[in-house]
Length: 248
Image (cartoon, rainbow, N blue to C red; front, side, top):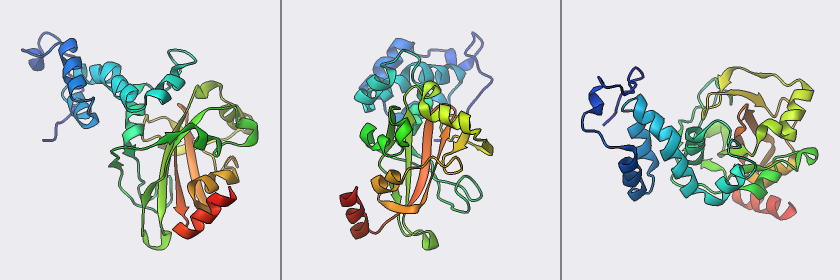
């Protein structure tokens, strides 16, 4: 069943959905029993603004901590506000491949976004996406989500990631020093913040394509103001990508 989001509802005494509704503590226990199912959390947040607020404050936070506990501990290790953009966008980043729309960030490629059951994010892999002068930054990057046989585009891979404490990172400082411009029309699919093109800023190291197993000149990614990263690459055939990995 598709639920239409009701933004006007603030869960006041006159709200219809308050009659006999469960308390936050009970909902916490219910979703704990459901292992913080992300699809059910998304459905609950569509009921009204009160449930949406509960999902953002509590449920998505517990989902992230359960899905990637070591990563969450690291992202929060520099302070309680070190996870930028709040928990819901991070929960979406963990479980959703954004794809791309025709005429959007990645030119004329049309691949719909979709739910991803489980994705591995690696801090070690993230180092390959940083220039040498930015290697002290912490970036978690996913394995590429493969979309094979895309006609003339070949085999495509979509990847995503998140910076720790992006506001004070070397990458952001370099983008500012370069005077890099934000994309005029497109926004982060996870938090709706504006985006920098790392390709236009000339900040994509060769090691990124080696890590992904992609062609050197067929990789592009963006970073938003909240430190979320999303990108696309054209994957090498399996035998060639294995040789690239050995060279790396």
